[in-house]
Length: 163
Image 1 (cartoon, rainbow, N blue to C red):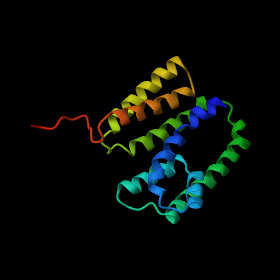
Image 2: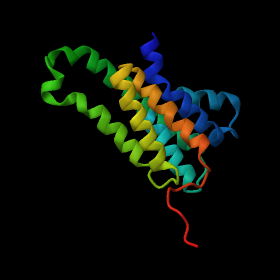
Image 3: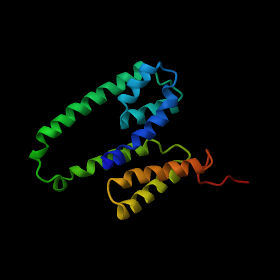
Image 4: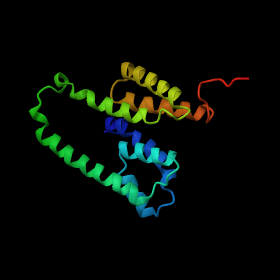
């Protein structure tokens, strides 16, 4: 149970981040929005908000519902047919999830704190993986990135301004 919490702790962070984008929705719509919140849902909604567009309920539902439904169907297919693949490591399938998350992280690379936060998260995650083990390295890396983002000034880019 603790490993499930550790791996899925990112959804606490997603909810905190998306909350300011959907605060204008009625409570029932917000509850549904949080329920269908997935990794790509968060990334695309944040990108939309960063571009100055409103994250409306119909738009959010139109994006999130198909992702959520496909997630359920694909999970069922994996449960049914996954045992037909004897060694996922030999096929390199186990590498798909890290590549997927890397793609999501790269989508935020234009934000001012992106590089220092990614470096802190990656370093903490690697150290935690070597010392504490999996799956705790995921949550520890996330917390390290969040803590650095809280500590650094909001517009810190790592580049000093010219005099």
